[in-house]
Image (cartoon, rainbow, N blue to C red; front, side, top):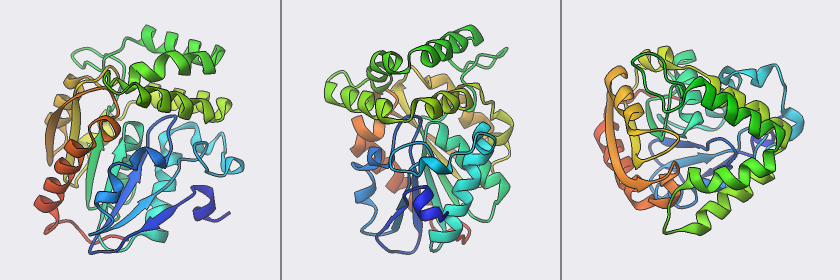
Length: 273
């Protein structure tokens, strides 16, 4: 099966570098519709659906391959190898930010810089590390999700989205969750919420921008501060936003942050693709 069909890859624009946009759990590439168009005028952009989400080919889903983020990271490597032109800036939301880190550690020459939107290397509190949830919290979340995925989606999606002044966004995220294959979503949830990528982020060599919402129940500000301490070359920007999806609820702030970051690193990112 071709990578294009597997991940429903969409390539647009042209320019001196390529921005690869990767969506988070239960979403699809449409979640970037308010941000990506601002960059296709000056850069090549790549949008894709994670296998099991959106219009990806569900027949490509392999339980063993996607039992960890390494399988998703391998997909990212293959997408970049086939479609990217020039240096690559990987823009990942939530769990895809971590898949991008793993991909970069697998193939450091492929990704010149990272933009992480609402990233978390581990959701579970561990000693002095604050991820926002106890192991009991996560076990309860996964148990509810696995026993009643549609009910979980209806109650959790609006809370994850936040954006109290834009209730239609919560409805949109609920619909996105509900359109994801339930069995795949349950497995992807386990991969997402039980992964610990703290060692991976500490090894990241490329420059990174961390975009952190000021109020995010999934990735608290403390997580952004942790990443700011452990990633060797990074910039943390905390934007005024309630919710885990600032690329939908505060797109202009995200665009400005990304543009400023690209300007600061464009002269030194390695050639990839």
